[in-house]
Length: 160
Image 1 (cartoon, rainbow, N blue to C red):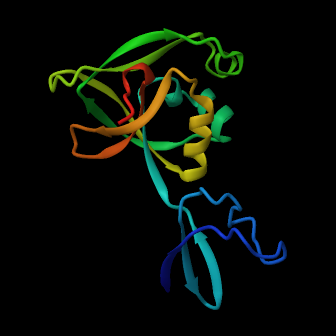
Image 2: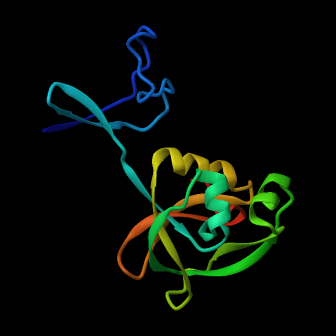
């Protein structure tokens, strides 16, 4: 079996474009496997750290259509705070308007426990849609040495 990475198909006839190949030119590259004269899309997994409502079964089912798997880990250099959510759909999914939010301290003694979820790129997009504007998705560093996306306080994120 051979593996190769391509960009999504963006300019071809509709009969050639498959549902597995999105037409969004900004989509991430796709991993394909070639074997037995067939082309198969392979889901590239992302890592997303959850420390709050995305860990709950109800939010996962409502957001992703099922429950996710992951590994317990500890984010370093952050503390948990709390914000009041105003988005009615998020409140409905989570059952509360009070949500935890990560605040950067850069203190290596500050830690937040949670779960690094294994998700597809589509599920990562769904998580982005679930999170409100007070959160920004950034890279996180963990006690285990793992790296994963985290949703942190957007007001602390500076664009350089």
